Length: 103
Image 1 (cartoon, one colour):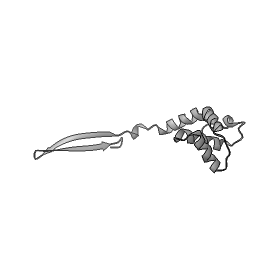
Image 2: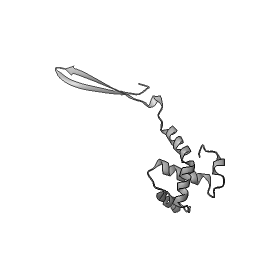
Image 3: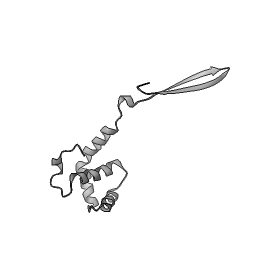
Image 4: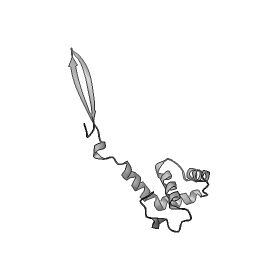
């Protein structure tokens, strides 16, 4: 589910899963608050765009930090591109090689 403790979701009329889903949609995809309101309404959840906006303000920083942590690559995710020029019978050829941490 989410790394945010259930205590943060206390005194909200909707379950934590729905709030977390709405906030993730806002920060992960280029959707407006009204788009998220429509998506939730299609699933039978009546929420105003202002409520989604308040959730984004209240919970957004924590979700954005989680998304940034997940999207950050490890050292092993980096690649090196090598280029070499080889002359064969007077004609130049460029050879390229891409290598990751495992070679």
